[in-house]
Amino acid sequence: MAPSCICGDILRLTRGKTVTDEKKPRRRPRSDGQRNRENLLKVAKAAFTAGEIDIPLDEVARRAAVGIGTLYRHFPNRDALIEAVYRAELDHLADAAPVLAAQHPPVEALRAWMRLFVDYIAAKQVIAPALNGLMGGTSALYAQSGTVLQNAIEKLVAAAVASGDISTEIEPLDLLRALAGVSNYAAGPGWETSAKRLVDILIAGSRASTS
Amino acid sequence: MAPSCICGDILRLTRGKTVTDEKKPRRRPRSDGQRNRENLLKVAKAAFTAGEIDIPLDEVARRAAVGIGTLYRHFPNRDALIEAVYRAELDHLADAAPVLAAQHPPVEALRAWMRLFVDYIAAKQVIAPALNGLMGGTSALYAQSGTVLQNAIEKLVAAAVASGDISTEIEPLDLLRALAGVSNYAAGPGWETSAKRLVDILIAGSRASTS
DNA sequence: GTGTTATATGGAGCATGGCTCCGTCTTGTA
DNA sequence: TACAAGACGGAGCCATGCTCCATATAACAC
Image (cartoon, rainbow over the protein chains, first blue to last red):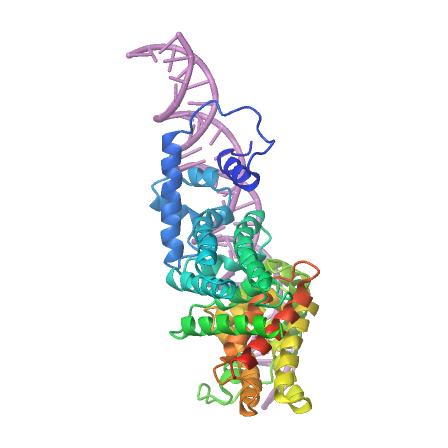
């Protein structure tokens, strides 16, 4: 039997109300289960952030004082674990978009968000290593996460286009892809600066093609 | 003892004349050795190009009709094999830079080369999957390969800057990084178009910041 | 409380793939 | 032809991903 817990979560998050399970859950989820799950996430996040992206899952389980079986019940594979860790971070980022949109004129909101994206990656090495997978990977889970960011930037771009500030030619996803590319290495001290410079280039380029 | 063949090659390619081995090689390299090496490369390239990036090395050896030990003597680990396969491709790309520079005015040469980069990735799925490693990875081998591309684009940018066409602010590597980001997914039919659009945006952005 | 049951636990163990070791075989040279 | 430098190959070791299932425990009904 497929373990139900994570799948349930995903389905719920993905499609809101699904047709999947008609029978309403008869029981509250067990407290130890939730505790363990959170523990695993905490440990995994710490490890990933510390650059230990390749940490063996047994080790994650050990650090969370949990059996390997438990880990696998909560997260059916490595990708699922990474996904779960990063989802929160990405949501955070996506949530910032509407706020910025309310505070700034369209183009500046876009620029600000892109910079935030860069900042975020710089601050937490968290995202970069997994970003490839997140945006281009084969995993359905990853695709799901990517969508969140995609929606965020699409709205920002749409607003900027509507205001006539940037060209209609712009494909929002391209901007995101480009940023993701830069984020691929957080090496060297000049990294952050150069990433921000790229943001300006992208914005300038998007503007220029209007004329 | 470390096997000598690959290390020797790398050292020679990397630093030209090294101080490493004083004693001149007493023998011509064995023909079967070279044959096997080429065979392995051919098989590996075919596999990688076909998207089988995760192909087990045993399988590569099998297809090349060679023992696993032989594979490992030629390529001490998976990265070394990938590196060897891609190096040729990257050199190819880098070699195009001076040709384009001779044929076009600076900015257009830059644009053309960036497009070529995109074309190349589109044509051979080869590069994309390994590009992360190539540009940001920890492996010294990868770093080495990246340098080739870096040199290529740096010259193109320098020429364009010298001609006053684009801003001095441009960090060539940023452009490469951005393109690499886009190349991360070759998914969807619109991919190539949108990548080229990004090239134009980057060029336009680089120009705009001059004024 | 106590009994019942759904649910979680944990770790032995299997499969797979990376990589090493070393006895055997081949090839270039004299 | 002799011989040694050097290549060959594959058995086998080890790490890691993932499964299975007997056991333990939290939630609920009474």
